Length: 466
Image (tube, rainbow, N blue to C red; front, top):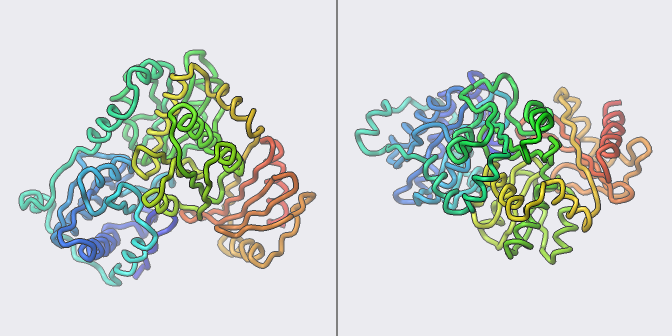
């Protein structure tokens, strides 16, 4: 029988191939076993996003857990991952589960586990759940109505809970005025109702229910967002653009000229707003692929920086035990103090909008202010779709220290915390790492500008594929 393994962020597989109701029941039972080991009377929030089969898989999960004597709070409709995390914390549940494959292509679905503190379950918890996954099939539970009637499953409006949390945490008057200059691309994902309900004057794109995502991976990166960039460029109405992925925990952001602002810059903008304008402090916890400029700005502000392996679960471990101001990934997953220890694309977008509203400055102006401290920089990325044997060969060469230069770029030192980061002269670097959620090899490069970063990427690509 198929062996189920969790990756960087949950278990993800192609629908009707390995992601089936039968396999979901196996994972649900393993989750239930762990829950019962954890607490005498465990309870759990279960939600699903806009992907195909989400409601069906959520009901399967709820039924298995209810049959094990675990109380289930089931979302009334599709929800974002942050909504499930917030619900788990606010309802005092042992855990949260969301059926989502996040930013993966539409053929995928997945299963994420959240902890009662409102963030990703720790690596130790994931290992414990994996160890309990049965090797044989699990019989279907009784129909959901049976568990509703028995009181073991009850519906919960996680979306309204989240909206109330937003309204109680932001200067809504300032945001409502700023929203007139906002264009939001929901990428057909679970964040679509939030902006619609909060800001009726905002311009919305791809904010309809479409489980196929128009055959585009709902990942908020530049190549997947041509329409929002064009809309901003063709009008002087918009001051910023916001995009979120399939489960709305990742952010994509655009300035008033329709230029994509990557996560490295967003992290630094958030740091500046929270420290200088809101008087907050704390550690900066970032994943291995985040720009070194984030550490430079942290030092400038007298803040400690901690670097983790890639995967927000590693960042979250610090956020629940330490005084952390920002926890962030290169891929658009960012969390801040004062919210939940969870990535939240919409929340980060609202903080940035509030920053603009409070200062009266455009995003481009705020970035220019940052550059006066750190200098300009650019981090670019290639996703190389390779055969498994070729990918393993490249990773093996990295492990063996075979790469001492890439074209004219000499390697000065190597870090291998998670993947392989090759430091080049002048503070530039390139990083090679296989994805933990997709069949790709990721290659990152940081340099003083985008053209130089791409030149490094081209040199690395030519060398490792030769």
